[in-house]
Amino acid sequence: MTLEILDLHKRFGKVVALDGMTFTVHPGELYGFVGSNGAGKTTTMRIALGVLETDSGEVRLNGTPLDFETRKNFGYMPAERGLYPKMRVGDQLIYLARLQGMSAADARQSMEYWTERLGVDARRGDEVQTLSLGNQQRVQLAAALIHNPNVLVLDEPFSGLDPVAVDVMSAVLREKAQAGATVVFSSHQLDLVERLCDRVGICARGKIVAEGMIDDLRTTDSAHIAIRTGGDSQTLANVMQTVGAQVLSVHANTVTVVVPAHLDSQAVLRAALDVGPVYEFSPQRPHLQDIFKDVVALPHEGVATTEIAKPKKKGLAALFGRK
Figure 1 (cartoon, rainbow, N blue to C red):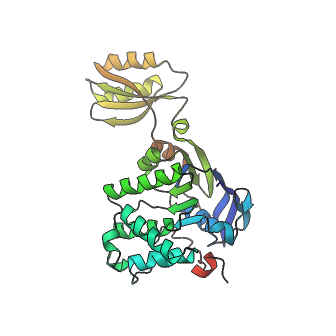
Figure 2 (cartoon, rainbow, N blue to C red):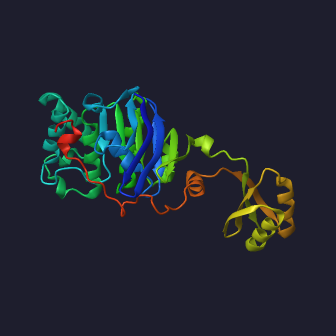
Figure 3 (cartoon, helix red, strand yellow):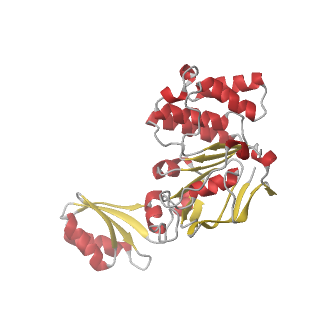
């Protein structure tokens, strides 16, 4: 199912949370939704789920505006823990599955599958509050998956997970996408987003400021080159600036530079050889973290942050279409 976020605007008093947020996620796609704190990620997800109302704009699923029936196709994982702390893991997952219309037998079968798949089957009889934060996160993902949704909207799903749990959750999300589900998630772990996602949308100040396939985003007009020298690296960095290259980093005996399109890379190499022996002169592609730093400015006055604006949430009943 195609999820469309269309020109969303949202204010909390004088604070602008969303300023034309627009992007589309296609079936079978893992879409990374990244941005600084307060950029509008959580507000967008809450509007998509009906927890918040938009001031203007629209969310569509397969071209149809969202309502109670279409939202049954969603699995949502909030950034904050949304589970009942004193309820047992297995009972809670069955209860949530039943709320989604599953039969008692199907709900139990789904609970057993997902707790085993996510490595918390031994904790089915434990209260949620007794679990570690990482295991609570696993149960929360199970709650989002329990009714086999076609659309997954996950807010910081990898927060607090150890490397083994990250691998398990990554594998689950890949499997869901390969099965045709539409998956969008936010994360501050940009190396993980780069490794896992098909496309990425970078948001700032309430709107998308860069978007595309990972490989496309990493392709630049200017060449990034790592130069490993046997001479003094700081001297090399100074010489690189003199010839017109931009110095990105100086680490031990390696200097990484950006060579503008008009500058001959061979001229840069000759300048480096004048400083001392060159043991490596290799092109580098910028990582998502570098791109993120380039396109995302710090929030300015009037942009929502989690400290500035904490919107009032609707209750659980409203989320499921009840008044």
